[in-house]
Image 1 (cartoon, each protein chain N blue to C red):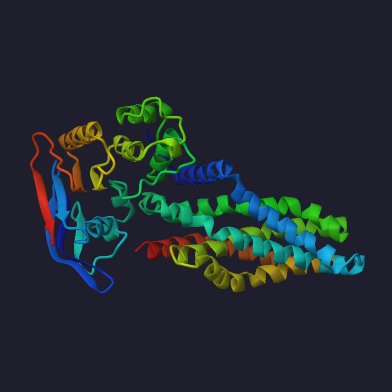
Image 2 (cartoon, each protein chain N blue to C red):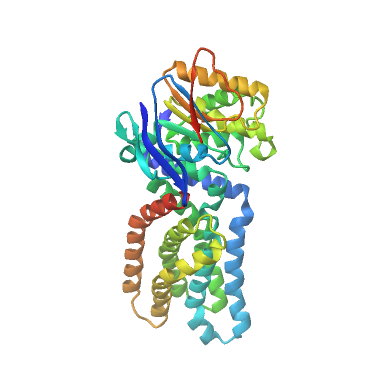
Length: 227
Length: 204
């Protein structure tokens, strides 16, 4: 028996969540299919005007990503809460924040990363230019982890509440608006031939701030919820 | 080692107990008794720090548990009503993950030995969802065999266990106490450990 390091704990928890998701694939697929459906419905509904589609593409992909990330938030801690694992996590002798960070990263790998990977394919439906596709993937890569991190706070606060799913969306969606604005703004900028640097730097800054604070805040919220 | 002084606890407006005092030293066993709803689980959860006491203090090795926080957690194991195991994983994976959360890394050999000791031979690689309630409880209890953690806090450890497993639990608790460990538990079943007098704590 060896003592686990903090990194070891992080790896353990990520591996555990990924393993659980592999055994229960429908959860991961629901988020992805929802994203694909919403994005694909727009070209069908709006009609085949390429100019308009190109203009709308960034916004639509970002709104769909935002909504589908809300869809999976409720599950972030609820299963662990119901079967008592969360109690054991609160007793983790190393650091609850690191453990929560692991859960957030695993959540992003399962709900954010698939969206990032499928987004360029969906972007083709909107006749996006290769440059815009690349920028979209980059921005999603920077932005979706922020959605998971802010969402984790909401998920932790609404743990065990009735109708928590709706409440978490009401709590978290307003906080995610800046991510939406700068994420979609970068795609708009590349379409109009402007630089994406300010948007990218702001998103990057938000990511770093979220990375530093949200695990700790979520850990405190979990302790409150468990009382 | 564990000292509780003047502890008061309440759920909402309802006061569960006040002025509770006890201490537990190395090699001592304590049973918490009381009717349903008298606050046994709340007491154990307070000892784990999930609930904040209304008044009073809990000390571990002379220092307040609240200040020790993670240093205290590394010296205790809590098993609650829920087994904290995942249906989708097998017994071995469950054991390794739950010890991982507790900050220990165990190899297959050690975990298999623990599971076999708990009477789960040939069940190690089955998904936990196909096991019976009693067998699931055994998976959860097998965590006690890993590592050398002094304080065990067990909430109804004997639920769903058969006669053989109850005997095994008595044996395990006996071994743990003889190594200088401490056990606090609640149960409605008789549990006797040879050569040890059980301290009784009555909540009313």
